Every structure is written in C-alpha cells, then in structure tokens.
Length: 284
Image (cartoon, rainbow, N blue to C red; front, side, top):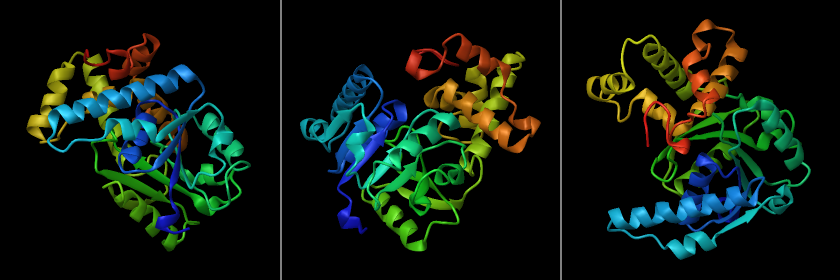
C-alpha cells in the first residue's frame, strides 16, 4: 500500500476520541466510515462535529466547509461496512476483552492490505496483534485529546512492524498535520506511564484534603508551565477511561504506584466522568 492508496478510513467508536478522529480526517478530505453500536450515539457524534466546526469558523479566519466535512462521514452499526477500508482507527473503551473481541471480528472482514491503528491509552499493542491474521499491520497510534486541535501523536511499534510500514503511517499522519514519534511497545507506553501517575496522585491529594482541584492544576500550569493540569486532563479524557487505564497498568506491572485512587473510583460510581457528563473534578 502507498500513501496515494489510502482513501477510506474506518473509525470504530463514536465517543470523545472517535468523534475527534473522524472530524480530523474528514477535514482533510478522507472518506470516513464511523462505526458504533447504536444510531443515537452516531447521531450525537455528528452533531458534536457540526458544533466543533461551527465554533472553529467563529473563532478563526480560516474557515472549514462544514457541509463537505459532514458529507464525508458515513455512519454504520456493523463492522461489515469496513470491508474495503484502507486504514481502521479503533477508539473503543480501555477494556482489553472488548478490544480483542473487536479485532477478532475485524480480521475476518477487512482486506489483507488494511492497517489497524490502535488508539489505546495503556494496552500493549502486541496483545491486539496476536489475535489478527496480519499482525504486522497492527500499530499503536495514541492521539492526543482533543484530536481536532492537537498536532501530535505517540506511535507505538511492535517488533513485527517494518520500517516501511512505520514510515507509511508517519506520512499518513502528516497528511492531516499530525507529527509523531515512534516508541517501543510497552504497557502505557511513554505518555501514560507518566501522565496517569500525575492524575492518580493529584486525585489522592484532593481526597486527602491537601489541596483543591484548582490549586493542584494551578501548580502545574503556573508553576511547571504545563498548558493544562492533570485533573483538567483527567476530566477531558474521562474519569472512567483513566480508571480503566490505571487498572491495565496495575495488572501489567503489579506496582502499587499504579493502584487507582479510590477518589476516582467513587467519581465513576457517582457518574461524575468529567466533561462528557458535565461534572468531574470541575463543573462544565
């Protein structure tokens, strides 16, 4: 497969990340097949994209063609619609059993040339590659949130990926103005082995009454000059996703530093998942 051959992108999962991925690639002219389990989820995703594009056009001189972007995104509830996709970008929740089930189905549907881009926070890419017929076509691409605005991704390579395939995916990302760096496969990779420790300990500080969420994030933004703090980041990702990712890290490493904060588990139990529910560490 060459860069010119890549025309149709399958995007699995119409949550926060999948919606952002679909929007980003549709903005640059790719045909998108967006797949999720229910029509109402897909409809909500397209409405979110419409709002995002409208807001972009209000705030920027360079305007996007909202109608053309939406027309490039085709929604489906069946994986069978991905049979002629050139690349599939999967964005379902960070639950290994669910991910493996998806790939076990996809490997019997997609064409042999299709690449699988696993957008995961912590799950080792090799575990996904082990269940498909073409493991050399599986590569991790950890997009940063929000995808339409972030111009960088962490690419995760297994030992099966050739240099040619790695270069192809890198060039593919550059087509939508996303730079990347490729790291070796490992649970949590680089970004989340670090960022989830920050989020987890920040939640513990709030639980212990040492600081408010505002104070914790202020130390990061004003003291360390980070663009956003760890608790706002957790809200943006989704507290449930952070909890699932920490559980994966703890299962893989068996180290106490990855034990999920009880404060975040309680937030999930109470439905306080961050921006997507209107309340997390902050209110929206």
